[in-house]
Image 1 (tube, rainbow, N blue to C red):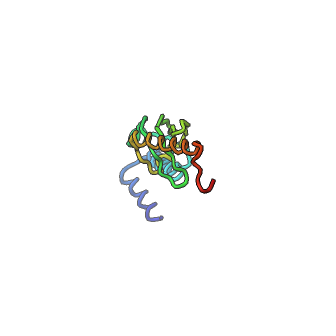
Image 2 (cartoon, rainbow, N blue to C red; image 1 turned 45 degrees about the horizontal axis):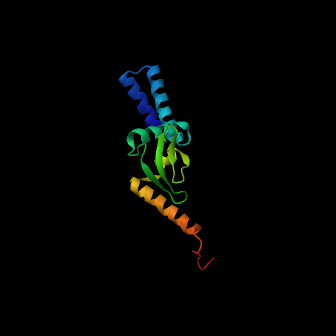
Image 3 (cartoon, rainbow, N blue to C red; image 1 turned 90 degrees about the vertical axis):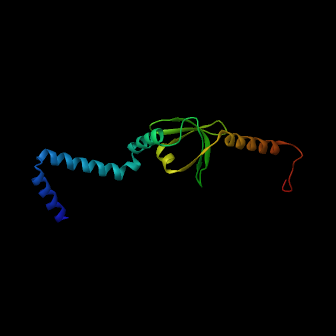
Length: 140
């Protein structure tokens, strides 16, 4: 630690930085470290994730996606991407808001519209089979 402190002072003297420049540099480094270590739990992380989703992720408004998650699998159509949330309309026509940090951290599969609507048809057929009289199973 002492070595790096002496090295830092030597570089400041050699390069001819003023005190204000050194303080500004230290402040910048501390700010970057603070954002890097604590942004995961802050609003800044959601904003950054929203910008990543909007500009750099292959996900677009109108796409049909499936969030591959063991505990809470979800699929639907992306309705909106805001700075803090992604709005996803599922098969039951319910809109879910997911935090952008969650969306960036989870594995997503972009589906073709046909796949999404095939899943809806399968669910509707299963509901019809359950409601049709005379289709009792051995457990009924």
